[in-house]
Amino acid sequence: MTSHRASECESPRHAPSQADAVTLRPMREDDLQLLHRWLQREHVRRWWGGDELVTLEGVTQRYLPRTLGQGGVTPYIALLGDRPVGYCQSYVVVGDDFWPDETDLGARGCDQFLGEGDLLGQGLGTQLVRTLVDRLFADPAVTKVQTDPSPDNARAIRCYEKAGFRPLKRITTPDGEALLMLRAQG
Ligand SMILES: CC(C)(COP(=O)(O)OP(=O)(O)OC[C@H]1O[C@@H](n2cnc3c(N)ncnc32)[C@H](O)[C@@H]1OP(=O)(O)O)[C@@H](O)C(=O)NCCC(=O)NCCS
Image 1: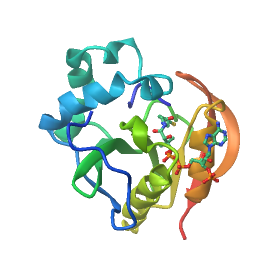
Image 2: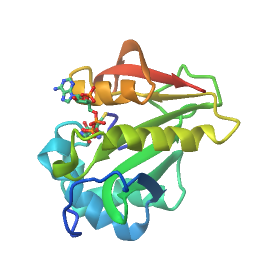
Image 3: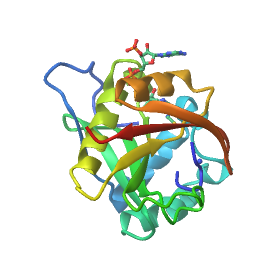
């Protein structure tokens, strides 16, 4: 995870059913408290963020500008039916300080997590990533999508493989070691 971009739901809990599909909506300012709660959960904290995300102020400082369309990162809330279940974001790679060597203006990146621990490992992350990637490729200017999990995050890597990403190479980012994974159009 790249903390420069990223680094409880009160709805009734229910098991995902075939009828529920993961959809995305733009994140809004009034989602900041929910995002803050998710970011404190152990299964998220292990892979996402940094000390500055412990407080609501820190989360607001990082994510509020994104909800206002400032910077190159676009934030979304993932919904299962009506229930908010996760967060994801996309970014334009060129101009992002993590990727000084990228020259393809069509390159996009994405990062994601499920905030609700009871929903892990049921295929929803794969659905979320597919939905986000489809949304990105709906723009004809987009040529490829990258993501960069920790090499130790085997569940995320498997999820991204199921969503069509292929491992390209291990890299060192300002957040540490990462596995760069790419999904081409199609
Ligand atoms: C990463 C994440 C989005 C994936 O979503 P998910 O719904 O849990 O993933 P899925 O159920 O779609 O797929 C997970 C796959 O990994 C496999 N898996 C789970 N734990 C694993 C492990 N320790 N080693 C290898 N594979 C593992 C599952 O069996 C499944 O593969 P399969 O369908 O072939 O059996 C979600 O787990 C999450 O939010 N994790 C916490 C935060 C995080 O790691 N975010 C990613 C930062 S890069």
